[in-house]
Structure formats: structure tokens, C-alpha cells
Image 1 (cartoon, rainbow, N blue to C red):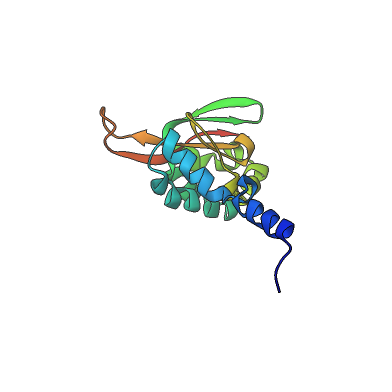
Image 2 (image 1 turned 90 degrees about the horizontal axis):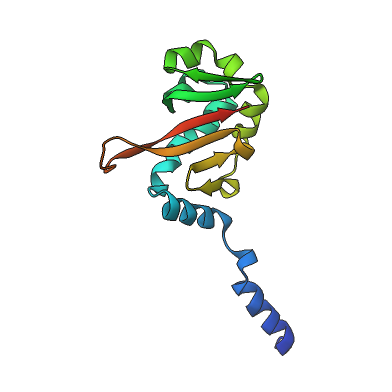
Length: 146
């Protein structure tokens, strides 16, 4: 059975439509273009999402770059190190932020030249240079905004 030519044309146009593009691939390409090392984000991002689901303060603390700026309870905190973060975890990361980041989908990440935003700005991650030439870097949490 042959499809009417109009229907065949519509199917062809729909297959080429940007609306049907893979959103995760678009996010990956945007990270790569603006920040580089999109592949390097995968493990830290996955670890962060799982740690937020499990209220795992130690893992979350290990994923941060210090000093870390945290907005919580109407205050701004400069968290100096992992121990400081872990000791004050319940005050620094609200249950709402944990829940929102714990449900983050890769395709819904927002990306700009500052980094990758999770959960509508609750958490920001960026590639942190390990040397002056930035030949080596790692992904880390750079801000938390409850």
C-alpha cells in the first residue's frame, strides 16, 4: 500500500524537524562548545544526582570546589572545606534542593559560559582548571542556591 504523497511529505518533514532532535545530544554539544570536556561531566553529575537523592553529604562535599558559596536561609555562606560542608549539610542544602537535583534530567540542564545549571539554579557546576594553562580540569560544584 502506498502512502498518499502529502502524508509521505509530512512524515519526511517531521523526521527532519528540530523539534524531534535529541535534547540530551543538544545539551552535550552546548557543554562541549561553551565549556569543553562534556564527557568529563558525566560521572560527577551522575554522582551528584545520586548523592542528593540519598542525602549523602560526604559525596556532595567531595564534588565541590572550595571555598564554596552557598545561599541558604536568606544568608550567604562561604564554605571553606569538605568538613565544614559535611558538618553543616542540613543547613546548607535544603530538602527541596536535594529533591530537585535528585530528579535532574540531563536533557533539562541549562548551559551557559558560567557553567551548567541544575534544578533551575539550585546548583551550578563548572570545569575547574587545575593549572594556569588549564590543560587539566575537573568538574565541580561551584555554587548552591537554595
